[in-house]
Image 1 (cartoon, one colour):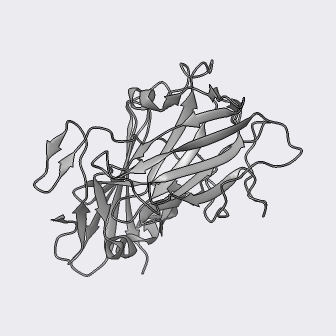
Image 2 (cartoon, one colour; image 1 turned 45 degrees about the vertical axis):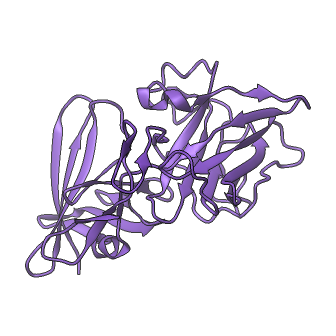
Length: 304
């Protein structure tokens, strides 16, 4: 794999593991255009969901469904065995299990030697999240596979009345992730989705560990942010001294020492530029652009 410099004056680096776009030969293998697109992680991700692929809760309402597919390498052909697949979604009342030990409608499985994964669960429903617009029904997936950045995405369903009004499902990136709920010969509902792992850059763990920590604005320590590492990606869960989602929000490495929120509505931007200074301290410049085009810049320093 081609290695790229991540931070100057250090031995840290990023690994180019794949590419997207038109099919091309990268010098070792053919790279396809079957990349599975990313989507927002949402506020309700919880790590360490139990290893199980049957999420059905006896006695609970909901339409039973089987979600299955194949996870493939970035050549769009080779199955990826033992990829970790996490699934989570809301219950039939539109609510997520945010804290119970049961991890309701949350589970983890691993692909077999042919790359197959399968979950048995219920179909999620549209819901109103905090008084805002309705979100269409969707599954959340996180796929972790050695050699690739974990892939976070969502699956939607044809015919949902909220697909058009939702900025995430209405994005061109989501077109291939709006799926038909099929009915099998046994009368069971089925959703089939094959996944191709094609994230471009995976940052070496040593780099992420160097960046993780608590950062504050030198002029106002109430302006701060916490970065931490989970599943080989950099996350943050404290902004301006306030905790965000129960677990956190993921970033994506985009090159030139910069991380970004991996999916935002068109016109919005949220990036973090890191710099390791000569004395070993770490500086982070946060850039946020809202949907009105207004820019906010925040400079932070890592606490030692």
